[in-house]
Image (cartoon, rainbow, N blue to C red):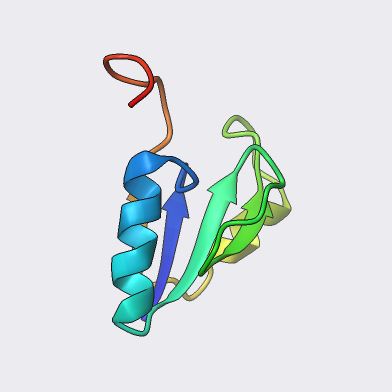
Length: 75
């Protein structure tokens, strides 16, 4: 399975990536930073406009959106 996680470089995304990677998923993280994410490939995006990141969605089985404002501050 191919899973794309928008905003997946944070606390919750890291936990999901570990679980999905252990289950054999191919993982792609859409991120505003170019910092590497263990267990996933990272594709840059700005969350506002279409661009090359839309190619990462092609053929994805699942899209999880974790992007947005933090709740209750940093964990």
